[in-house]
Image: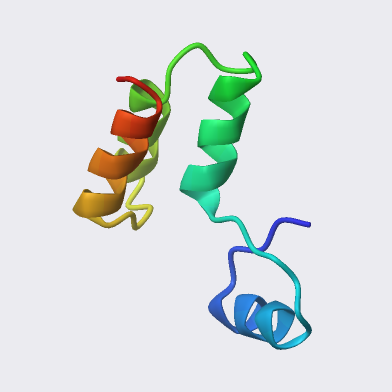
Length: 66
């Protein structure tokens, strides 16, 4: 299940669901070879005003080896 709504995420957490954010989904996609690189995808999201904390961007790129 993919949720991007803050209230929906809170409810899912209260129900005991394990959540993975957008950055985590993208990292998994790269690990599985579904996308060749994260940086262009993250840059595109940021250009569309998608909110990702700079420290999260840095960490996820490091985990991806980029």
